[in-house]
Length: 242
Image 1 (tube, rainbow, N blue to C red):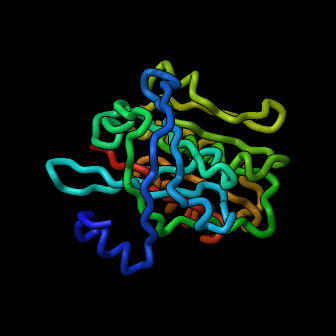
Image 2 (cartoon, one colour):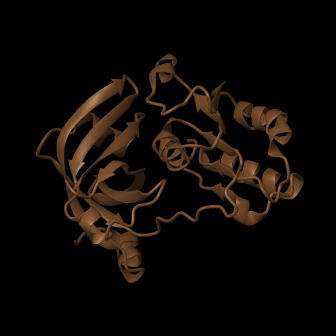
């Protein structure tokens, strides 16, 4: 695929693979969260069935004629049918604008490069998860991958309708702790509550994906102050505050 600028050139050099997805349908989950169903353009067959939790793709959008890529987690990938779903936490921006207007027959170019997941070994006795609407699809895929493992989830919310987001929770195993979005609120709540659930840092497992600066700060806290080993912390900044 041409026209992806220097980012596309770098991804191609790193053996990124390009695909074109086709929209089959779309639906609003809430006024701030939209689900888009797509045909995969051969993506899932190309993986040879090697799917993993939190698997993501880079979508390409144009803004003022310039290409921009954004990463999104695959939801319910079905290799036999060659379909999957993407979920968008809507805000101002080119990706959200595309999702709001997506209709059957629309296409979107994508590149797969960089996605991966290393299962923690030994497996944790409890998942400690920190996220927000942007990372909800990845959170759900992680919970799906560990169907017998208890989890505590700190989840930052912004809108009243976030109460209706499509969490995949088991009331007997999952403890969801909502945190209203405010400066420093999520980090303060995690610092206050996570240590008592940590146990032996060498056996703990913390997965976090939220705003980039908050993710960096919490990652440093986990590793430097709580002594959680690097391989037991999976962190990635999903977005940047304006």
